[in-house]
Length: 68
Length: 149
Image 1 (cartoon, rainbow over the protein chains, first blue to last red):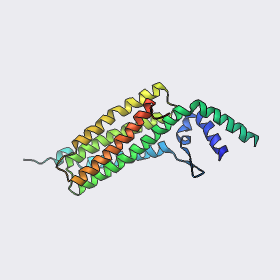
Image 2 (image 1 turned 45 degrees about the vertical axis):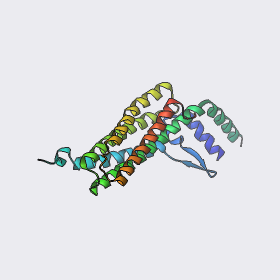
Image 3 (image 1 turned 120 degrees about the horizontal axis):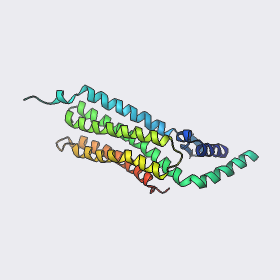
């Protein structure tokens, strides 16, 4: 585990392009978990945009205003 | 065994050099992920309340439009963060410039929740908005270098 953490830290410091993955090295109950934090954030932001735009497109502003 | 020891020493030296900024970067990444999750919860709550007739189309539209802006800024911020392995002063300014306007828009969305809405629905929406604001504030603190790093 120590070795894995060392390698991850070195790669993280030397290779910015994969820093987004290796930043997530965590020790939980003596184990190492790699969580792609930024990938998770990106996927969620994209899903959110899709969900919101789907609703906005299906409920255009003019259509919802009552006509008197 | 020898390689392991050398790698450990090198890693320790690198950690000493980069520990503070890396912690801020990690805090920022986590704050972005947390805000994405909180926005998702808010959007679902708002859309469900609208479908049940508990929230008007206009109020739903206002909140979802603000949410889209926050999501887009979040995507921009993650794209910028992905390129970094430490937060320099310029990086901090650039990411802050993306996030600060949407932090304001969330505050505006909170104010847009109509008072006439059923109290439980209103409370859920406001709690979700506050969770987003808390995550974005955490990102802001990391960018300001005051998150303990």
